[in-house]
Length: 102
Image 1 (cartoon, rainbow, N blue to C red):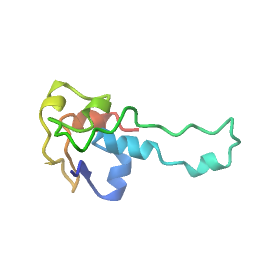
Image 2: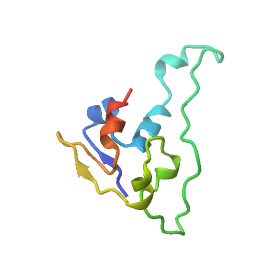
Image 3: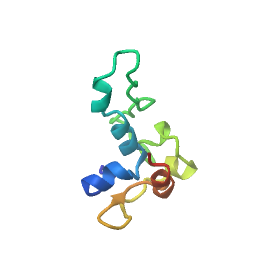
Image 4: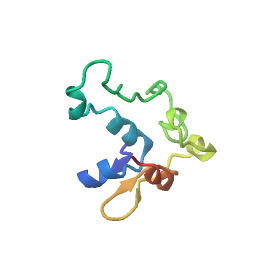
């Protein structure tokens, strides 16, 4: 399932889905390559386990690993919702996630 779609610059500037945030956080930074091993920043890891594809999961598949998840996230899968300017996200908490974007 698609969780987010946006123009590239908007996606990196203000991701609206926690999974997208996690993926972007795991990208090595070029400026870190010049630092020695002690100074280098550790890559961000998405916590938890990926759910089994054998079982149907109610709600968002990312909810068990999401720091923004609410009860609704575990019960209902959010639709891909238009957030404007070609940016859409399947997240009940997209506005909160976007406001917290780095």
